[in-house]
Picture 1 (cartoon, helix red, strand yellow):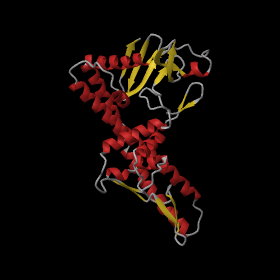
Picture 2 (cartoon, rainbow, N blue to C red):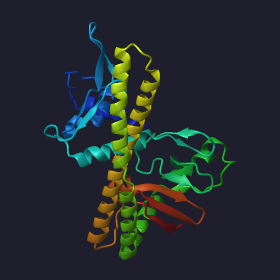
Picture 3 (cartoon, one colour):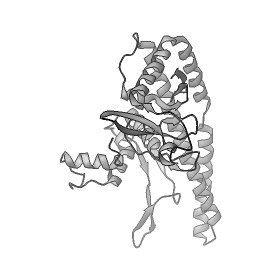
Picture 4 (tube, rainbow, N blue to C red):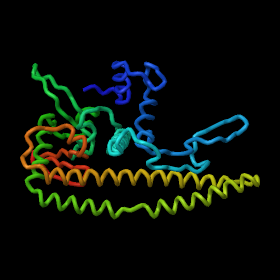
Length: 310
C-alpha cells in the first residue's frame, strides 16, 4: 500500500491529469488542496473578515485571530457542492489529522489510505495494527500486526497476526449480526440519537457571542483612549478558541446524527444478508476493530458495538 501523504497524492493525481490550478499553474501544493477542502464558499456560506487591516496607511492586513468580529453567513450565495459532502470531508480531515498517543507514549498519525488504517487496535496493549506484506516461501499474503511487535522486537506484546481477508470477514459478520437482530439494534440507535440531541450547545454559543460583543467594544474604547487592553485581548482570544471548539462540536453532532439516521435506514431497508465486503461502508461507519485473543469488538461511529468470535 502506498503511504505517501494523502494530500501529496491528490497533488500528484491532479498534475498527472493535466489539471491546472485556479491561477493557471501546473504545479499543485498541499496548501492549495487544504484551502479548497475547507473553503465554506463552495457550499454557499461565507465567513466575513477572515483578515483585517491593522495599518491603514501601509494597508497591512493580518489574519483575524480575534482582533475584530467575524460573521458566518449561511446561504450567502449559490452552492456548487452539497453541504452533506462538505461535512463528510470535514469529518475525514479531523480523522486524518488526529494524533493518537499510544500506551507507550508514541504519537501515531494517519499515514495510509487503506480503510483499516489506524482503526485496528490491539486489545492486549492498545497499540494500532500495521499492514504488512508477507512472502512465506513464495506464498504472498497481506496481514495486520501489532505495532509494538514490529517496533520493539516482539517482546512487548504477543498479539496474534491477523490476515486482511479475516478482517474483511469480521466486518461482514458484524454487519450481518446487526441485520439479523434489527429490532434490538434499531432501538439502540434511537437511544444513541436521543443522547446526541440532548447535547445542545446553542445556549453556550449565544453566551459566548454576547460576551464577545461586550469585549470587542471595550477593546476599541481602551485602544482609542490609549489604555492597556492586554487582559481584554487575552479573554477575546480565549473566547474565540472556545467558539471554534463549540462550532466544531456542533459539526461533530450533525455528522453523528447523520450517521445514526443513515444506519437506521440501512437496517430498515436491507432485506438480504451481505455477502461481499464493501470498503466504502467501512470508511463511512467503522470507528474501530479491537483485536482480542478469542474475539473481535467492532465499534461503529453510530455508537454500536458488536462482538465477533475469532
